[in-house]
Length: 146
Image (cartoon, rainbow, N blue to C red; front, side, top):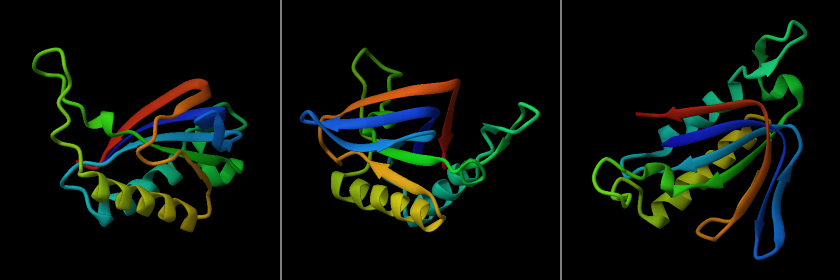
């Protein structure tokens, strides 16, 4: 499971001109699910991201997690994170999980983040989305369970 995590001051995702998910300060998680991923990957990655200390404390050090700052999370499915661009000019997505498996693990990730006490908003799985965000810092991190 692969995630691109961005610290934001605000973010929203729109589908067909309607806002389907919106947060204030927190983290945007673009989430890609690989063929070999399972429930453990979703659980471990959600815990890792929820506990990431990427928010500044009073000494301006990245030392605080989402719960410490009352932050929210916006999770957007992003199979293109599994794109392999090593050959040619067109990405290959053979590493990405089948849609049914990916959706189940995406939902499992969201459930786990919510279970850990985070308010979570989402995009819409397998839909064309527009994601708007204000990256705070900027802070952008790549995480992978492999």
